[in-house]
Length: 520
Image 1: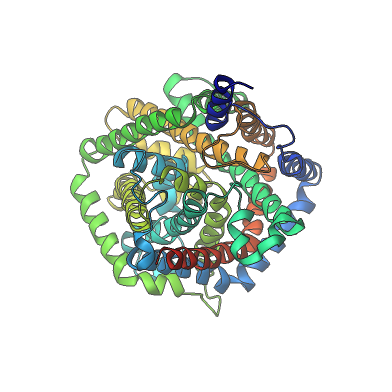
Image 2: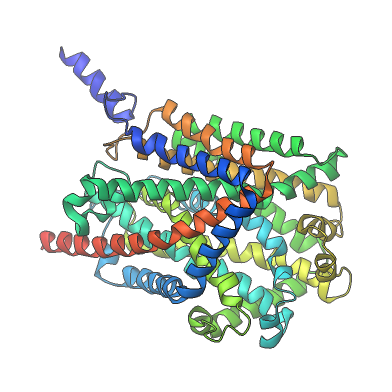
C-alpha cells in the first residue's frame, strides 16, 4: 500500500467510516432487544399475571431498600461537589492544553435538551396537581408551599448529580485514559480488572442496555397522550391510536435523519430546541397574566428547597404513615438511575477539553436553570389557576379525567391558546428528537467490541438503534399495561445499576488518583 492509500485509510479510520470486520458485538446488539421483545409479548399475553409479579417486585425493592436508593442519591450529589472543589477539579477531560470543542451555549443546550426528553414539559405542567391530594403535602403545610418545592426537589440537584458524576467518570475514561470501549462495563475496569473482559462485563452491559431500552420505550407513554390530544384540539382531528403512531413515526423520522449528520446535527437541533423552549416559557410567563404569582411562588419554592434539602433527601417515613417517599422520591431516584446508562456518556463525550470543575458546575448551571425555570413557569401558572379558583384541576383528576385533558384545560386559559399548544407540540417533538439523537449515538457504541474516542459508530448501526427505539413504543402503544410493566422493568433494573454506579465512582477515584500521582 502506497503512502497516499495509507493516508486515505487513516483518515477514514479517524472519521469512523471504516467498520472493522469482527468488531460488532452481536450479543449486546441483538440479545437485549430480543429480551425486551419477549417481555413485551409476555406482558401482552399475560397482562394481569405480569402486572401482579412486577408490582410485587417493584414494591418490595422500594419498600425494603428505600434507604439504599436515598443514600445513593444523596451520596452522589455530595460527591459531585467534592469533585468540583477538590484536587480532581483541575483535571482536563482531554489533553492538558486542549480547548472545548463546543461553545458554552451549544454545550449547555445539548446537555439539557438531550438529558430530559419531553418528560420535563409534561411533568412541569402537571406534577404539582399529582401532589395536590396527597396527605403528606397537606400535613406539611399545603399545596401552595410544598407542591412546587417537591417538583424542584425531584428534578433538581440529586437528579442531575447522577448524570454529572457519571459524565465525569466516562469523560475521564474516554478522553484522558483513551480507553477503546465506550461501555458501562469499561468504567468498572479500575475495580473489577480483567473480570470486565469476561462474563461479568457482558452481564453489566446487557443489564445496562436492557434498562435503557425499557426506559426509553416507556418514556413515550408519558408524553405521547398529551401530544396526541394537543394535535387533536389544534387541527380538529380525532384523537386515536393511529394519530399517536403517526406522531411517533414523525419523531423517529426527525431524529433518524439527524443521526446521519452526527454531532453537528445534534448540536443544531439542540439549539433550535432550546430557543423553542425558552420562547414557550417567556410566552406563558409574560402573556398569561400571572407573572407576579409565578415569580414569587418560584422564589419561595427555591428558598424552601434550600432550607429543607437535607431533610427531604433523608426522610424515609419509617412508620409508613403516608408512603410519599416510596411513591415519589424513591421512584424518581430509581428512574434517574435507569436513565444513567446513556446520557452521562453523551455529556462526557461533548465535555472534551473542559476541566472536571467546569463540567460539574456548568452542568449544574444549565441543568438546574432549565429544569427550575420550566417547573416554575409552567407549573406555577397551572397552580395559579387552581389556587385562584379559575380551574379546579384536583377535582377534575378526582373525577377521573385524564391528566392530558386537565393540562389542556389549563393551557386553554392562555391568550392564543391554540398557538401556545402548537408551540408546545413542536417543542416536545424537538426534545424527543434531540434526546434520542444522543441516546442513539451512545448506545450504538455498545454494538462494538472496541471503539476509540476518535472513532464513531457506523451510520447503519446508528440507524438500526434509531429504528429500534421507536418500534417498541409503537408496538406497546396498543397495550397500556405493557407500557406500565416495561417501566417497572426499568425501575427494577435500577437496583443492580445502583451497585454498578458505586463501582464506577470508586473506579474513577482510584484511576484519577493514580493519574495525578503519575503527573507529579
